[in-house]
Image 1 (cartoon, rainbow, N blue to C red):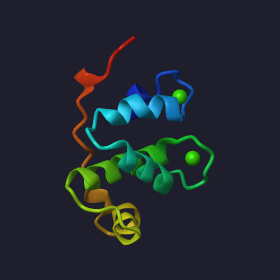
Image 2 (cartoon, rainbow, N blue to C red):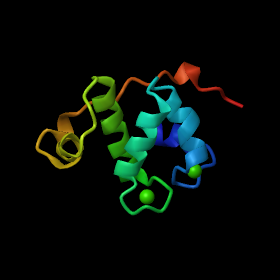
Image 3 (tube, rainbow, N blue to C red):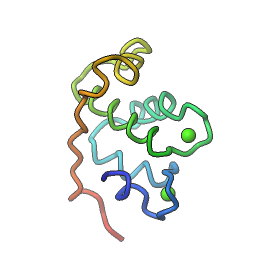
Length: 99
Ligand SMILES: [Ca+2]
Ligand SMILES: [Ca+2]
């Protein structure tokens, strides 16, 4: 459901311009958000598709729990047995300015 909100131009993918205001509502520093992007945009095309976006949300949850995003932790969070159990992060949608 977050995907639809983040995809403000409704083209079915999330670009950097859409991602920045959306993920800033998570309260994470920009450096962390950029790091997460580099982990989840696995095909490196500068867009997040749905599965990449879902992975992004998982890593936001991990980062919000104050765990460091080392390659091992990221791998476990995205592909390990615990991956499906990672909840979606708290996102303050009120903070998203609707133009
Ligand atoms: Ca879009
Ligand atoms: Ca991509």
